[in-house]
Length: 72
Image (cartoon, rainbow, N blue to C red; front, side):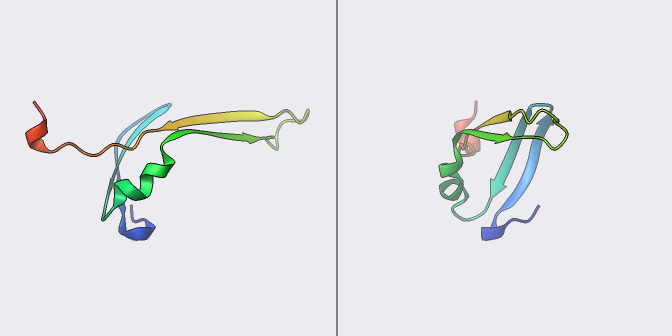
């Protein structure tokens, strides 16, 4: 998947409620580090006749890929 900033993205693991992505490119970790932490989206779905607010949350971790010499 091509992204702006010269990054590429590869899905390593996709499960319901969980995803592991690998971003590659110059300064990818530095560019994505500010996204680390919790994110919440609140919206009133168009199908909700009572106007109730629904919340969705996600936690983002930005980690460097370990070198082969760092793995056991």
